[in-house]
Image 1: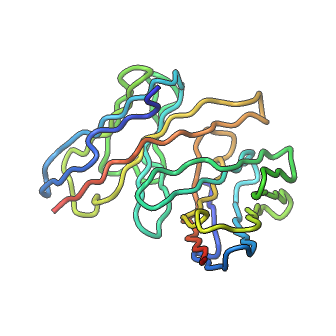
Image 2: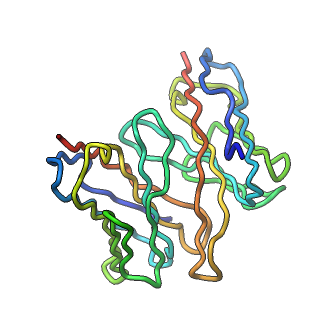
Amino acid sequence: GENVEQHPSTLSVQEGDSAVIKCTYSDSASNYFPWYKQELGKRPQLIIDIRSNVGEKKDQRIAVTLNKTAKHFSLHITETQPEDSAVYFCAATQGGSEKLVFGKGMKLTVNP
Amino acid sequence: NAGVTQTPKFQVLKTGQSMTLQCAQDMNHNSMYWYQQDPGMGLRLIYYSASEGTTDKGEVPNGYNVSRLNKREFSLRLESAAPSQTSVYFCASSIKVGWGSSGANVLTFGAGSRLTVL
């Protein structure tokens, strides 16, 4: 089955810096790669996603890149703000199914 | 629209007791899911249902049963709770966006149910 590895597990940055979170996946048939943000005590919420037929996608301060050959994808956050502090999860579909397999999450702390 | 509603929000059980977590969505989504979240372990899929009347095991199905009662509701049952099942449980539903191989199921999560087994 699909295995999604996420690193680093924690990251602390100063406000205004950039943050990068990297994920790798194992199933070459995976075709959808979303990123979820979970604030403390709240539910995960989708912030951006990318499909296997696209290499890069950007939405304001966040962007995601996908390298299908290397089986890795990354989330980039620019000009970080304290409200970006949360746990971020990457995920990938298991083969051609609807099942999403999540990474273990990365706790981002943005210091004012 | 309420989105995805889970009940109860909190529950404390003794080892060996049984209980059912309820989940309902009002977005007319076909697919529904149950995930388990433990610190440092991410979100692990317990069971999912692609449509009414169908269910499929996820990564960690042992000790759980599910029932897709109708299109709106997907329940998770613990027949004999164990301390290892102390966790936060999230229900989610999804709708497919796009077509064919470029389509994707975008998940909407409920608020979560925190279960403690003593």
